[in-house]
Amino acid sequence: MLVSDVDGPRVLLVEDDRRLAAMVSMLLVEEGYRVETASDGQQGLHRGLTEEFEVLIIDRGLPVLEGLDLLRALRERAVVTPALVLTARGAVLDRVEGLDAGAEDYLVKPFEIPELLARIRALHRRHLAASESLPVGPRRLVPATRTVIDPRGTQSEVSLSERESALLAVLARSPRQVFTRSQLLAMVFDRADTLGTVDTYVHYLRRKLGRDAVDTIRGLGYRLGNR
Ligand code: CA
Image 1 (cartoon, protein in one colour):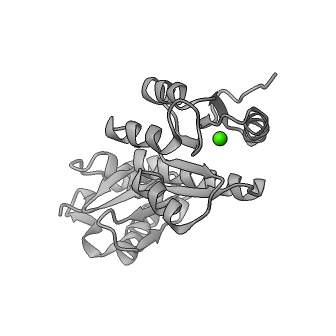
Image 2 (cartoon, helix red, strand yellow):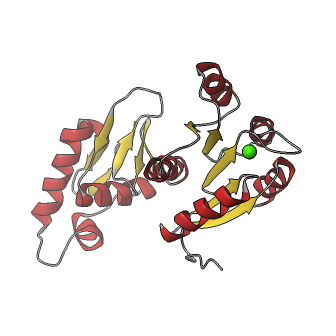
């Protein structure tokens, strides 16, 4: 009997090889994931459409409904959960087909467990990036990873310190609100800090993200840059 962490990310594993499914779910549960399994494509489609998951792991060769057809069906119904496809084949064409069907990643059997776990962690980070981000002008702040990403596709990703990210998150959650330095001091910083600390961190944010990342409202305080 597997005991899942109540708060762990939910993973749907669609795999007809029951021994492999049992082993992978056990390892994922040990890593803190909550794992649901389906042993054919139809079952996988049902669960994928009716439940919320953070990551999908789909075997390519499945009874009833083949893995890539399952994935296409989910994507057609706007299920955007990141998916890792498992396959016994590793030809370039298979990989291309998998990516075309809407897979984010592809792993050839037999695989090493640490590699599977690393890929799933990466997919989960991607899911966080997609689901928990705040608009900062044309870019987005991902509080979970403390990065500012540019969804327009350029590779530029800006890493923030914990306090920079916390300050920017407060501003970005209420983009029209002007915050006084005292408010920001209380919300983001420690008792030992001073109002000057707030100014310093605004300066750091502007240095990393551009001058217009944060607006100064004279006599009042700061607001998220209004671009
Ligand atoms: Ca199979």
